[in-house]
Length: 112
Image (cartoon, rainbow, N blue to C red):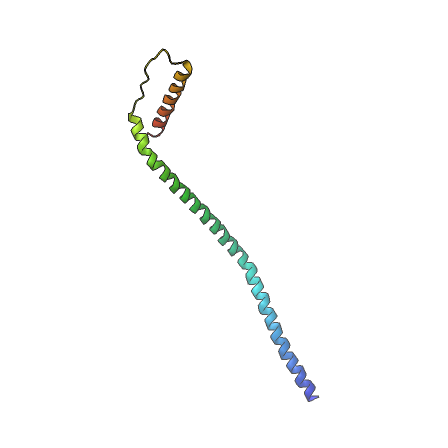
């Protein structure tokens, strides 16, 4: 009977230890579930940071492209295009020359 009682007490101690382990694991799972919102916020912030970095990179590359051509645009604003009146030019050539001149004027006025 004494041996039996010792066995029961040993099983009781083991059962208490396992119950404690289960309660600890359940608490850890609840904590992980509560952290889900935090991880969602982190994910959103990372996505926003990547997007903003891409925008900055795009703007920097855009600035690099406009700076070298701005010298040309400033120089071309001072150059005038005088087309002589030649009767042998066809109407198509004149129209094309007028279009080129108007495009150049628009380009110089849009940069001012």
